Length: 413
Image (cartoon, rainbow, N blue to C red):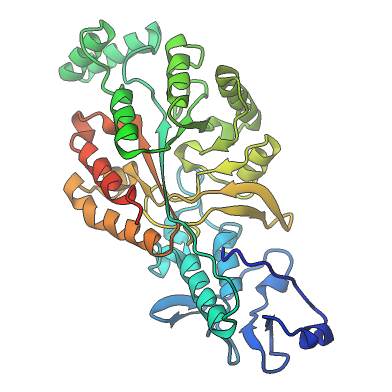
């Protein structure tokens, strides 16, 4: 993260003789050099239950306390590795109804630092210490970035769903005595009313107004209980995908079903690749379903290089306590992989469906998260959906929330 070249040395004589900037990372110092206490995690192999005890450093949580005088009163390298590798997600835990690791079991939630990018903050502390001891070191200043991402789970609310699904929807509306929805569905299908989820012209207007570089994730799975997009063979859907590709990157949104049936993942990637006539390199799991390490291993096998799933559906903030992209470290295989993970920290459904916030109630939380990311010059990544721009029924008033995000997050200081 600090963009410093370094070399590991395990020979005490060589280390002692070296006259350039150096520090020791061990159970005890070699001499009078700059010393960071090593708690031992990074010298282990395998996955074992960790004894974690929390304390405070500079008013923020820390763990793996130093057992002797050290540059910091804890081991920031072990603590950062534990958080970023998602070590706790490999340990025994109870999954939620969708087979996901629950945020409520995470240390970040239990100890109240979900909305703090602790790893970025610790990195800044280390940079400060190194600059004090070695003024000749050229310090790297990261650059803040805003990355808007949009999931297309359901390209249209009513149109282009096929005769059976459209007819079934109309019957369901009548059986539920939802005559308002029946009229809206009927008028939309007959072309007398715009489809409420067709918000793409508005999105393009925002792209131009704020000079955005969005990433779109498209659901290409077959129709199922949790996968309800338009059939991938639909020509209008294919035209929409090509249209969106003119304004931003397009990645795969692996279906809910593909988590249980890995062969579906290859099929869905091939479908999207065939429509765009290009290789697909980015992904985000539908329903944010991650099963470590298997989900990421499958993506790597299919040459996916960037994944944007790292975050929780029910809590805003930093699942891995970091807002900088990082390469996935496979704890099972003990290797750093070529898959780069881009953590997001804010999603529309989190605010509305999980936290039950009204649009105007979201602003303080959004401002806090943006400020946290800007303070450490990280990446502020949001998830929105095309339907969330609809300005009807349950999403009425949420366009102004998104524009509030853009007014604050898309500003570079």
